[in-house]
Length: 115
Image (cartoon, rainbow, N blue to C red; front, top):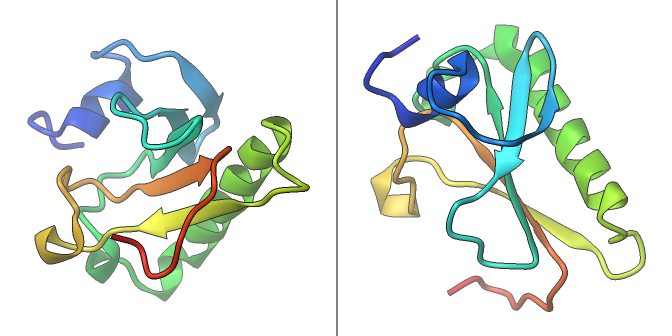
């Protein structure tokens, strides 16, 4: 746990946020600056700054993050129109909070490549 990390404070309950999902390994909550009707974040409870800080021993939690993001999209009714999962790794790729997180976006059309 990093006491200066925004997401660590949410995970620990020191910073209140309405949780969409929570278990022993991960937490999901709405993004404070949504870019789509559904825009939530799935984060591990353990402080991992980015994907380069993970290894094979993190595969189960990474898979759980993807499965949870998919379930949140399903609950939002996106099985017909689809959704997007986004990992930003480091500042050059758009990461602004250095606690690993998966964006779950849906409810509007997306283009490729992203802007």
